[in-house]
Image (cartoon, rainbow, N blue to C red; front, side):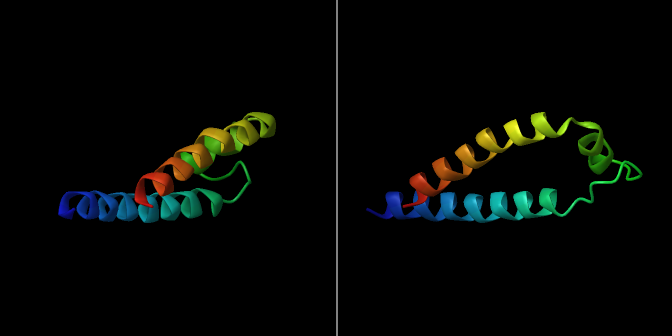
Length: 68
């Protein structure tokens, strides 16, 4: 039983860190003047950005499934 509890705790930490990463990505401004990852995302077409939500939140759902 301890192994499952440890694995659940590991996936809980991963899910929280993943949510923090999603929050960080969502706080990047949408103007093209930014550099780094924000610049890459600013030049990505909005339709493709919307498609990227599906795998992003699918992974988050899988992490929560593994946690619970």
